[in-house]
Length: 191
Image 1 (cartoon, rainbow, N blue to C red):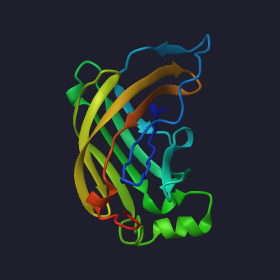
Image 2 (cartoon, helix red, strand yellow):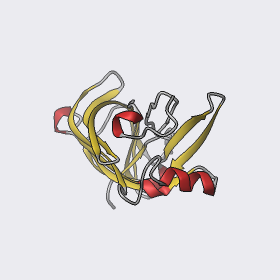
Image 3 (cartoon, one colour):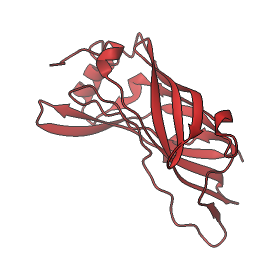
Image 4 (cartoon, rainbow, N blue to C red):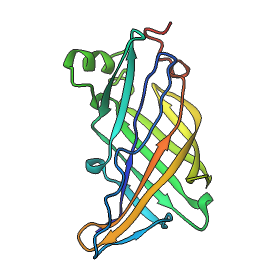
């Protein structure tokens, strides 16, 4: 069984065009047959999209916020607890998997005013530098959306690690970073 990462990313598009990411789920309490670590463990982990979430919130008319998600994403996390600089993260998101629970809004978000999913089908984050952070790791990487790549810095908070016969090796992180959507050409309804 290959190791799995519960690593969820949440995108929030605010009026100022802010985007952040975090994991969706804290680990459950360990069972008696399960070993759980309080510190990051080394390994290569595939992102478990079934147990992770890529969420976003949009402020509408400066009066309300609703939440949505991207339903299709994948990636890999390499953790070297002893040498964080040898760690890496790659996350690939299918732009057309945006889901806000409203088909009309989702079609608009997939279109050229926002994610332009036909022309730019993937949103990608690829780390370039990983170092020890206050609650896990600090990750500097390239974030690509709408064909534009910008460097971002993300704080990756370690949530937990567990290992058992049924589920194998699992690790989880909460990750946050901020961008201005206009830096990527997503200018619709700004101001």
